[in-house]
Image 1 (spheres, rainbow, N blue to C red):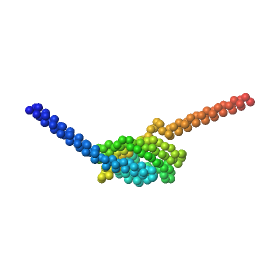
Image 2 (image 1 turned 30 degrees about the vertical axis):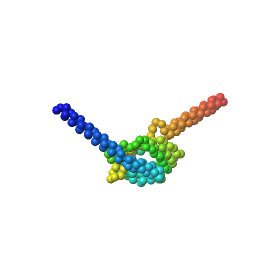
Image 3 (image 1 turned 45 degrees about the horizontal axis):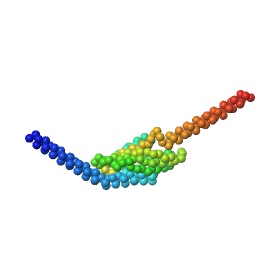
Image 4 (image 1 turned 135 degrees about the vertical axis):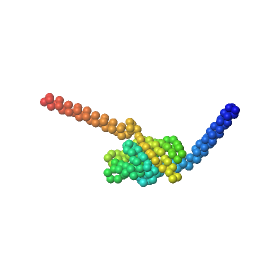
Length: 199
């Protein structure tokens, strides 16, 4: 009797496992259309930013989106995202004339029901008013949710290497130039003092 019960339970477990595997396989196969839509969303986000259109960019976001920018500022909600962009790019009194980017996907998105998580890299170009343009390699990660049948960005995080980047390299060179200039000025001053003492 015990053996038959064990056999019955084993059969139930095997059937359940087979059903689960079939469900996962069906789910994986059904994601092709979602992946296509997410790639289109990524392409539109890039196009909107490169066109300096914050309206196109935020149209891809949920109302309560959270964005962590490269300078570690956080914007919560579309209104804050727009306010940040308008403060930083394009208009009078902003920091950047324009900002363009080329994004790439790291690995295929991971799905958890109607939630998708993706990450990748970006090649950014900044055009500040106060200096010449510079380029920065950055990383991004995003959480998207299917809301009313449409994929929307609900969280976006941007980051860059704070230990090695063009701005730090430039600052390091400036330190060397300043140190060299200071040393040269010191030598000239010492030479003049010695000449004055000899007179």
